[in-house]
Structures are given as structure tokens and as C-alpha cells.
Image (tube, one colour):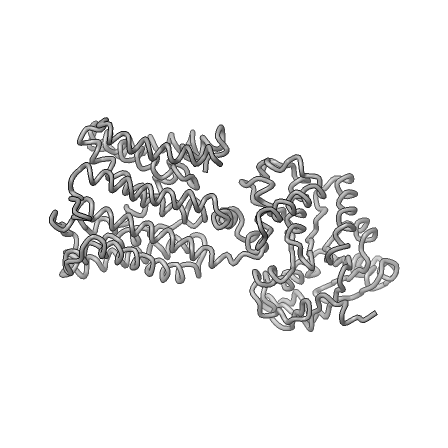
Length: 313
Length: 240
């Protein structure tokens, strides 16, 4: 257990040192700030998919709920960062509760379809209410509004540290869940929900809690994305933003704490480098993903855990 | 002996229909505390459906279930289990990516860590899996997985443990050990056993209930069951 905690804290320390020692170029610093926020979103997704075994195809709904709750409150109501973050967390949690309550009436493929449908409703609503949301075009959060405790969040250094802070918070919540009896029950539900039920666990309630935690973390990541990068747009509510976290989690390792981060880094740079080589970069990405799936079907961290380091959470 | 005080579970006209087919038909069943009861019957007699009705996996079409003096007919599964009913599946159902220890730990709720650990080691010792405590349960042999499932049921400390065909796929030696374990369990809990292996049934059951086409056709000790022409007919058809 101690080795496990040291590993995860070391990963966070490493990300901190990369910046403080000036190892990053400005380009990679920006990339990594983005990756860390997206990995926080992946952590949220992983709690539902990796730990509880519920495959959602509509997580962009939660990400965009946080993104738009904070973005619109700053844009239209002149909220400060603290107020907008608080609002984003509350709205994400509330939406997760409602969606969870409705979606959990279904299981398996139906659950996937229902979550996808809700997400599409949100996406189309964003486009439909263009007078408020600025539709497809989206809107920019002014630099003057992106100040937190007198710190300018648009400053690349501060942005990186803020992204790292958000990721660290989400990752530590994930680690705590993985180690807790609550997390063990989630894993039991993933492995065999019938058996978990017959051990006396209220499986539906646990699943609902899992959706609320997952959706709230995803919403927080969405809110931070808008605040740190200054842009809120409908593309973040599109179906591709529901597929991305699934890919990060699958590549990094479903049900592992570091999996979403490793998956997000891998995907981000794979697309980045492949798009330098050819316009048809998705072919390269597809082949690479195929190899990862063939040779590390538990994901990178998942495979390491299965083969060598069983103690990794 | 005060029968009312000894009763742990009873049903009143318990019935289940599946789209016009009656799987369980107005069953009135009683089981006393610390009894080992075997529930037998030919394939399709409704045994698994009946025990699923008891623990709430399936909702009854009609009738009531009383457990430990309370009507539990409308309780959801998890509440029935929490009230003291343990159930082990016909097809082995363990958490194969978790260790043996973690599997048993999941069965124990509302206990302090120290107490929990002591229960885990005690039941694993009883079923003979103590040396495999850290092993991934999916890597255990089939026989050991059945024993693990039994340990999980035992660790729940239920008042009534329902075992659905627990000896299926076990070797003769494993079955002998299993019989000893069940005898041991019955000192502290009631056991309801669905079993096809008649040697197991005849050697450990205090009382036997025979189900056929969803109805109880006979009930009693092994001698009365063996000599009951209705039971013979149910098992052998018109040959008897």
C-alpha cells in the first residue's frame, strides 16, 4: 500500500518538477496543461467505466455542463472564478443525479444509448439556444475575468500549476476511492453485479453515487478547461468528447489511477505527431491504437499491473 | 418444543408465473432454526425459482415470505440479505479479479477492521483456503472457487444460508470435505440445500422437501422420502 501511494505521489512530483526545473518548452508546457485538465476528465470517466463497469457514451454532457455553467456565469453574470467554479460543481452534481436516476433504469447497451441520447440533447440545446451560448462558434472568456486570488490564470506557468493542482485533486480522490471499501464495492459491482447484490449491497445506489462522483469530476474538469484556456464551445459537448475519455482510459488502463493520464498523454501526442506527417493522421492513430489493443489489452498501466506490479491501484 | 419459536422462515401460498407457466405453485414451506434442509426435485421442478423468491432475486406473483418473524415479501434483495439470508449461486460467482481475501472481505459489512480480519481468516481456515489468501481468485481451481463461494456465504454470518447445487463439479474428496463443512455450519446457522447428489442429501439433510412442477409433493426424513411412491414417480416416471 505504501509503495502504491509513493508511486502516485512521485508521478505528481515529477509533473511538478518538469515545470519548476524549466524542462518544458513553451509548446509542451501548453500541451501538458491541456492534457492534465483532460486527464482530470478521464479520471472522472474512469470512476464510472473503469471501476464500476458502466460504459457511458454521453460523458461530454457532464464535461460541457461544467464548462458552460462556469463559462456562461462569467460571460453573462460577471461571476468571479470562485463563484463560477462553485456553480459548475453544483450543476454538474445535480445533472449527474438526474441523468443517473433516469439512465440507471437501463443496463448494458441500453445504458450506453440512453447516456448518448442525453448528451446529444445537451449538444443540440447548446446549438439551439445560440443567443445565450453563442452556438457552434462559442465564446471567449476575457483574460480580465480569468483571475483567481490575484493570479492571472492565462499566464502559461500559472495555468500549468493550476491544471496540475486540479489533476492532483482528482487523482487523489480516485486513489482514495480505489483504496476505500466504497471503491471495493464498485469493483465488485463491475466484476459481478448479481453477486454484489446477493452480498447485500444496494447496487443501484452505489451505481448512482458512482455516476454523481464521475459526473461532478468531469464537470469540474470542464469548468477548469474553460477558465484556464478561455474558450467555451459546442464542440466540447459533441460525441467525440464522450469517446475521447473512453479511449484515454482504455489505452492507459481501465480501473487504474494513472491510466487516464497516460492514455491522454499517449493520444494527445500521437495525434500531434501523426498530424505533422500526414493530413490522414487518423490512419496512423488507428494503427497505433490497434497495436496497443493487441499487445496491451488491459491498457498500459493495466498490463504493467497484471504482469509485474500487482500492488498498483 | 415450541414450533413457533423454532421457525426461521416460512412461506404462505408462494407462487410464481412466467407468462402463463406456473414455476412455483402455492408453496407453503417451513424451515426451522439450525436445520439442514435439502430441497430436491427433477430438473425444472422450480427449485432455483423457489429459492430466488425467498431471497428476492425474483418477485413473487402471489404469496408471502416470512423470515425471523417478519414479513419480508416486499423487501428488496439487499435488505433481505442484510436481514440474514445468505445465498450461493448454482454457477460459481466470485469476483475473479480480486484476491481471495478481498472476496471474503466484501461479504462482511458493518464490522471493525480487526474483527473483519479475524472472521476472514477463520472462514478461510475452515474451508482450507488459508494458504491462498493473497491469490487472485480467478486463478483458483474450480473446486477452490466453490469453496471460496462457500466461505463468502459463511462470512456473512447469515441466519439462513441457501446453497444452490454447491457440489456440482466437485471431486469425491471435495464432496466429503464439503459435507463435513455443512454439518459444521449447521451448528450456527440454518442451511437450505438444493442438491442433485442424493448421497450428499441423504447423508447430511435433517429433512427433505421434494418439489415437482412447482409444488411440494413430499416432505420428511430420508426414509419417508425414499419410500414415498409420489417421489419415486416424480423421479422415475411411469417405470415405477
